[in-house]
Length: 362
Ligand SMILES: Cc1ncc(COP(=O)(O)O)c(C=O)c1O
Image 1 (cartoon, helix red, strand yellow):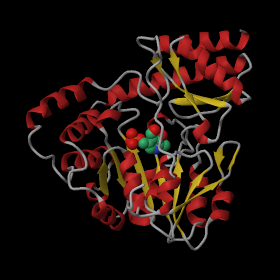
Image 2 (cartoon, helix red, strand yellow):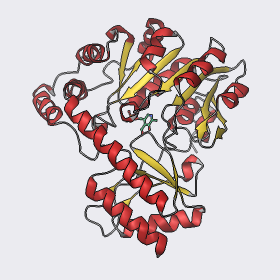
Image 3 (cartoon, rainbow, N blue to C red):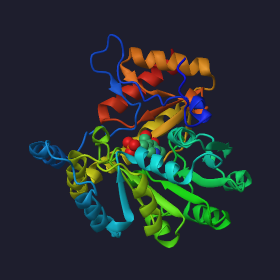
Image 4 (cartoon, protein in one colour):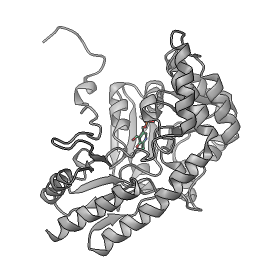
C-alpha cells in the first residue's frame, strides 16, 4: 500500500466501467451486438475528412472546437456559444459532475440508468443516489422523493440505455417543474435520432427554455464514430461557461472535429441508418415476442430481452457466442436475467433470430 491520499473515499466504491466485449475465442469475425454501434459504420465523407486531417497531425487542435460547434449550431439551429464539445458525451457527463457534483452533493440517476452517471459522480466525491424505476422506465415520483437539500444533479437518459424506454414531453416538463430550481436536469439524448414518436421531448427546446437543463448528444451512435470520441452539450450561457472552466484545453482532436462536421453534412447516411433500424427493430422484437421471449419495448437501436433467470441468460450468452454473436449481459445494470442486443445488419439480425429460435427450442 502506498501512503498516498486519494481525493475521495468514494473512488474506492467505483466499479470500473466494463465495455461490451468484441472477441470470442475461436471466432474470427464475431457479430458484435453489444455496444449499440452503427452496423453500417460511418459516412464515407467522415473517412475522407479524417484522412485529410492527418496532414495537420503535428498541430494542436482548435481548443474551442469552433468549426464543429458552428456546424452544430447551423444544423440544429442553436447558438454555437451555448455548445460545449467533449471527447464523447462521457466527457460532458464528467464535466457536469466536476462542476456541479463534488463532496457533500448527491446525484440522482435511475435504477437501470447509464453506468457512467454514478461512476462520474463518485469520482468527484459526490454520492450517487439510485432511484427505482417502474416497469423499467424512469419514474418521476421516485426521482422527486429522492431529492434532498444536497441534490445538485438529476441524470435522465431519454431513451434510456439499456432499457430502451423514454419519458414523454409532458413527463419531462412535469419533472422539471417539480424539481427545485437549483438542481441541474441532464437530458442525455445519445439515441435521440432513432426515436420516432410524437410525444418525444425536444431536449434542445427544453434547454433553451430552462436555464437548469442541459441536453447532451453524441456522435458515437447514429453517426457511427465512437472511436473518434465526440459528443456535445447544449445549455444556457452560464452552464456552458462553468463547464468550459473544467474542460481541458484540447479535449477534442482535430480528427473528431472534422469528422463531426462531415458526419452532420451527410444526413442521407443518417436517414438510411434510422430507416434500417426502425424496420429491423420491429421485425426482430416482434418475431422474438411471437415465439415467447419477453422483450421490453425500445425506441433506440437496441432492445432488452429477459431470459427469466440469470442461469438461462448465461446459457443464452454462451450459446450465442458459439453461433458467433456477442450480446451484452446485464448484471452491471442490475438486470442479471436480461441481455441487450443492438440492431445489426440484415444478415446479422437474421442470424440472431435463427440462433435465439434454436436456443428457445434446444
Ligand atoms: C445513454 C448513454 N449516454 C452516453 C453514452 C456515452 O457515449 P459516448 O461517450 O460515446 O458519446 C452512452 C454510450 O453507450 C449511452 O448509452
